[in-house]
Length: 146
View (cartoon, helix red, strand yellow):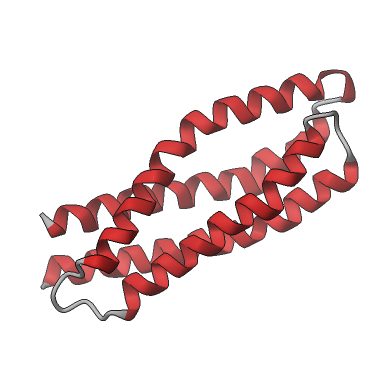
């Protein structure tokens, strides 16, 4: 059962790692190309549709990260799941305090300063999820070879 948690955790973490890189390199930069007359509707649709894609894996990632801290697989160093949960706290904190406020501003219409702040601050999540992806892979390998 514990190995299933490690596999689930790695799966959703790596999924989110892929999503955040797509968002960072393609999606957010293209906000500037939408055009002012269409941007409010675009931002509204972006928020609604993105929630359906990211909320379930983010919640599964959080639950599995907590489970791995609570019941660590044998042979896995204690620092690994704790570091993973710490990185997840940084990602969620960045979402709440950096990206969501910029999306609220952009919800009223395209604003170049808010767009730049969104793209710049999203690097926190991109780096955080990338580090989590590497850590989740390491935990998966460790779990498979234990």
